Structure formats: C-alpha cells, structure tokens
Length: 275
Image (cartoon, rainbow, N blue to C red; front, side, top):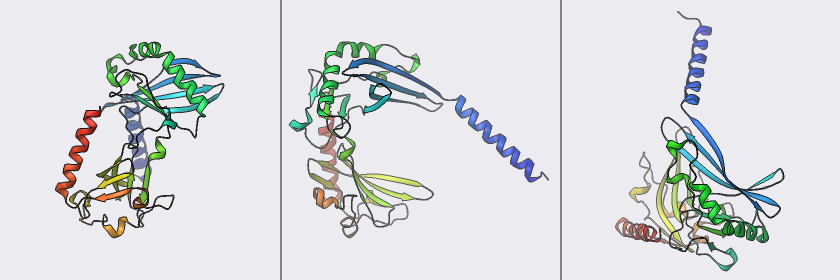
C-alpha cells in the first residue's frame, strides 16, 4: 500500500501537469490597435486575444493615458443597446452615415470623465476615423483568428454611465434576484449548489416600463420545482437604493405565458430590425 506521502506527491504532480497542459493549450496575444494624441494625453484601443483549445475570446478596451495614469474609457460591447432613449445631455454622436447600424458603440461615464474630456475624446475619434478604420482592419497576430470580431469599427459615442443602468433587486433569502440589464433584458437569478447560479430571461424594459413573465411561469421553475418568483416575494425584493422594481418602473406582469411569448417575439423582431 502506498504511503500518504507518495499519494500526496502523485496528486501534486498530476495537478502540476494539468496546469502546464492548460497553459500550453492557450495563447494570449495583446495589441495596441491605435494610439492617438488626445488633449494632454493619448487615446489607446487595447486588444486582448485569448485562444484556448476550446474557443477564443477577444476584448477591446478604449483607454485614456496621461503620463502614468490610465483610465478606462469603455470596454467595447458589440451592438450594445440601452433601454433608455438618448437625451440631449448625453451628447450622442454617430460616426457613420447609417445610424440604424451601430455595431461598436462607445459609452463614456460622466463619473469618470468631465464633459470637456468627453468632447475631446469624441473629437479625436471623429477627426481620426480613417486612421482608426485602417488600424482595426490591419491584420494582427494570430492571423488565423483575424475575423470580424477583431475589427471594431467604432460607430457612435454617448456620454452616459452604461453600468449605472444595471439594477439588481435582491430577494430576502439572498439566493434569488432580479436584474435589469442596460440593454433592457430582465433576468431572474437563482443560486444553487456549491457556488452555482442560473439565470432565466423573464422580461424586458423599455424606457421606464417593464414587461415580466406571469407569476408561477414555467420559465421560473427551479430544478426542485420550487418557485420563488411569486407576487408576494418579488414585491419585497429591493435594490441597494432601497427601491423595489415596482418603485423604479411601471411594471406590467403578463396575464399568461402565451401573451408574454408574443411580447418577447415582438421585442426580438424590433431589436433585429434596429440592427
């Protein structure tokens, strides 16, 4: 029989080999796609590309660099939409003639940048658009993964806190919540097991109105069959500000699943047409 020390050594070696294999099966490549003078600093689009044995991941961060200080302007989100229509204070600007298409919008938070800084960023992007387009279309390593998702054709800029539009309403048991995402989708979150979570799309917001699936919907059943999405429960759930979703939105709970399905289909159709 092996001693505990031998078994422990074998486990340690197995873990080390697994870690080496994981590292050897993935490759990270980073690039500064463009680097432009912008006021007292520089505007840089940074690409982080990760290729694993299963799939590839790519992220783009627009950064403002002044000396040693680096501020994130925005982490680009392809085809991102907001449930709120733009207002004049958001200074929305489209860089392309086709405003219906907005494949790579930029959202600049007023809490991170002054209006003067925002205007400087906007003007830098506008005046250098041909250079930017040439830079994002220039092939970059790894060339075998140089596809459309690595060509961020910046299309608009908007002075608004994107993440500030996310509202999460927590249940009293701390295992459930409702989250209104900036694009207007409403998700029911449920925690289960050892750190596991699940989310179900149960509604959508448009301006200050929200449409939700009917209570006791099949969409909200857990694997155990327990339904925490009930009228009595949801009306008690609060956001960090102390407001329930009923305080922040005009909520319409669909009377039937069939009616909710129709509303969701109509929303998908409108979203597809707007793209």
